[in-house]
Image 1 (tube, one colour):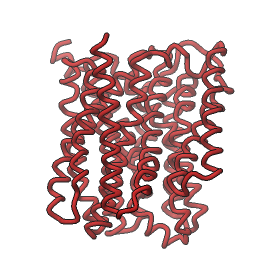
Image 2: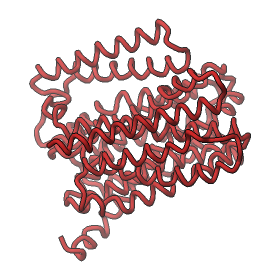
Image 3: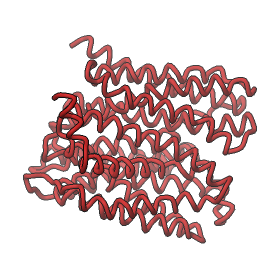
Image 4: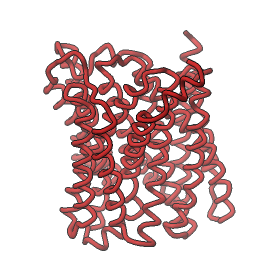
Length: 457
């Protein structure tokens, strides 16, 4: 494809499609984190008990991570644009309800609806993006921009949470969704063509129930462990998750029209890409969380300062998204994913030497900037790898799996490393160092596995 052809194909309607879908992805990613730094203020305003605050995040994460795969497949059957529009409508309603909430129960209902809307919209938007840009070079560029929006959206959400809470009110974290959601509801039906699987099949209801309930149980068990330690409820939830997920695999291998074809589950690139995503997104969200703890609890700065410290991550992600497509044109996605994960983990290692002095802020911002470049390169490589085995009938499934891996990583990263954090009894600074160190080593090991395994082929 010539450069002139690429420019022609990126004009007019396709540019509008790209802008609208990317704006929606950015907003959804920001929603995941925007209330993180505002939780104490939300709790004080609405009367949450301190032990119940985590449910503001957990309810969103449970629904977003637990239902994404099912909604992605439903979009293949019923139409991706239709699912996107319905999801955006639910998101608009949920955001209005959350912004006006006067009690804990109403806010939790709003966050539940936001999680369900995210589970519906995110894979549908990504599938429509891959369908709208079938040319490999343009698809890679579109996925690169999508990666920037999704990954930087989480970071910007954390920054916005601090800004809005300190300058206006946490309620604006909900209200800001409304103009984007309403614009998408108007524009998408006009400019984005409907797409669905050419082969009409029945939805695998047993598989859908097993995977959704299994993920709900697993994420709840991990969150419970981080909050209350390993108690009987957490153990039961985790054991139930294992049983349900094993049953899911068995059912899928015996079903004529499975929710997830076993051949796709066994595809090495798809399997590794989705596994790596758990560490990629879990590791980066946990780094942001512990950075906030360090800046606020150890150094004593405000949530506003903590938000500005994270700007380096946002800038690094934008840089990584801009150079990623060009690198992918020269480097195989599996190799790039492995190398990027190693780089992402390596630039977390300075966290092992954090000290209770403001002088470390400059070092932290610089290290996290480079870390973010690598995390964005990993994000783009993961998206290309995880959707590599998809055809026109399974785009929603592949993007649903990819999105679900991302959402699960974001949902379990902080609880898992918080469990590590709570085992350290020599002070909060030592606990932060330990959690970041474990995070770094895990990413380096996952990345090295891909590089070493490739070397044996």
